[in-house]
Every structure is written in C-alpha cells, then in structure tokens.
Length: 374
Image 1 (cartoon, helix red, strand yellow):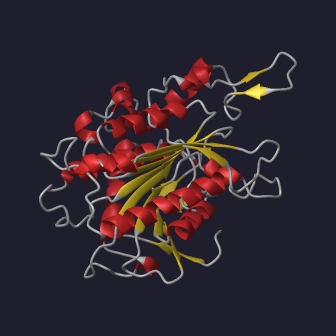
Image 2: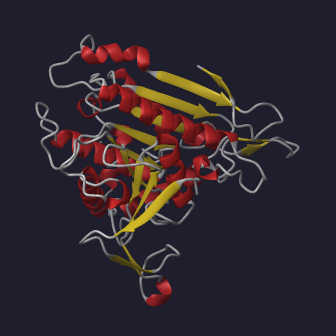
C-alpha cells in the first residue's frame, strides 16, 4: 500500500451479503467466503471534508475480488496518494449471487453515502461538497460508466447540486471492458501470436486463446452479470460501448488508461473517441506493450523494480483528478448542458482534449518515465 495513506472498513446498513462457495452449497467463486458487504476507505494525510472523493468499482469479471482482494487494496491506496483524494471501494454482490441490477443498486447507495461522508467516514453533509469522481478497472469500468449514465440522467440540469447524491465531476477508466457483446475489432487484431521460430510474441500475452474462443469466454461472463439477458449485451447503459449521443454529450471529464496490446483495447479507444466527438473533455492514454489491468502491477510483477506503465497511469490519473478539481474551483464549465451546442461553453474544451501513446524505452521495461507521443 502507499506510504502515508490511511484506511478504514465501513459497514453501511443493508449492504451485507454472503459468499458461499460450491463446497458449502453455494455458487460464489471468490476466495473470500463468508459474510461480506463492508466498504473500504483510503485517504491521504490531512484529508478532510474538502478533499475530493472517488468511488472505485473493482474489476474481476463481476465474479471475483472485493475491496481488499486481487491487489485492489494496493491500487486504491496508490490512487488516493496520487490524486490526493478519498477513495471508497464498495464490496458489491458478485455474480451469480448478484447481477447488473444488484450492482447498480449497491453502487448508487455507495455514491449517496460518499456524497455526504469524507475521510475517516466523517459526516460532511453540512459542508460544501468537493468534486466527486467515479472510477473502475476492467469489468468495474463498465459498471462505473453505467452508474455515471444513471446519475447524469437523474440530475436536474438547472440545479444539479440539490440532490442528496453529488453530480459526478469525472470518471477514470483503467483498461475498461465496455463492450459486453465482446466483439470489438481488437479481439482479432490484438489476438495473441508467435513468430515461426517461437521466439517472439505479439498481441495479447494474457489471453492467448484464438479470438473466437476468447470472445465466447468473456461473453459468458457478461451474460452472468446481465442475468442471461442477451439484449443487455448491447444495451447502451449496461454495455457502455453502445452508449447513445444523448448519454455521451452531457458527460463530465473522462480519463482512460488503455492497454495497447490487449484484445479489449478498442473497448476503451472507441468509447473515448465517441465521447470526444460530442465535446466531452477526454484524456486518453494508450500504453503500448501492456496487458489487461496492468495498473494492478505497479510494483513490478516480481521483477524487483516498479512497472513503468502502471506507475505512469496512476500518476496521470492523479493529475487528472487534481486538474479537474482546480478547474471546478475556478467555476470552469466542464460539461455540456441542455441547449449548448458544439460552439458553446463546452466547445472551449476542445483544446483540453488529449490522446497520448506511451512506449517503453528499448531494453528498459521498468522505467518510471516512459517515452510518450502526443
């Protein structure tokens, strides 16, 4: 975990659920069996009610992990340190015990709670709200976008601060899985392959099955989350890759950290491009020679030194949160509202849109300062 960051387990009413493994007659696949449902808070030194807050939705194919499993304790603490924000990771019900509807209910409840509470779980409801962000990795990023769409659509455009739940200030997506139909073009173009002599590899080194098999495997995981409802795999809210113009055009700023060599690269790239098309402030970083969820491996995968891409992605995510916070404090309009057109206030955000590609220095894979092309 990050140095100087503190943590607390939070138990909110109505969040309990039980992970019963198959040997106990249940269907839960995660290793953390038993009573679940406690959230985890992380915050940097000196945090108070004015500190920005992030609701982080963990990945794991909607079937695995929790706030402290799968290295998410390390990721959350490092994100808190880099962004200087309070980070909350809810322990939502995992499939097949839970599903999309359960996840949304859990996340909306967590968002409402975080809207009124800060570091140490302090009640901040009487204090002015700082910027609140949503974040997620892998499958968690899909759920994070679904939550974002729901929250934005429920806001009163004239009085967005009157709700008990805060208006999202932005979203951070790490190697997002946004196409639940699992047929994005990079399933084929980034499929794993070897050179004829077997010495060189290309494409997705983590998921090495043929493209059709990988797609079918992920699609079955998505169906479990979607309660076997095939239509939901292309629903614009459940499967954000298919989001409609009216959903995208009023979004707050978005940050994407994308693995350049994985089969789901297009899940992030296409959604980022479509959002930018409708004048959303989008920062898109593509990290070449990296794999799905590389951000979880900042300490180097046992190599004895930090992994440059994960360190850079966390640093950039932290910068994004701090910069959006600064702009919000200056009352800069960061999103389109009904009646705005591309030439309106949001049109001025075009100069702020960024897309960067990060390449590892030759023969030096663990550098903290990668080369970048903008």
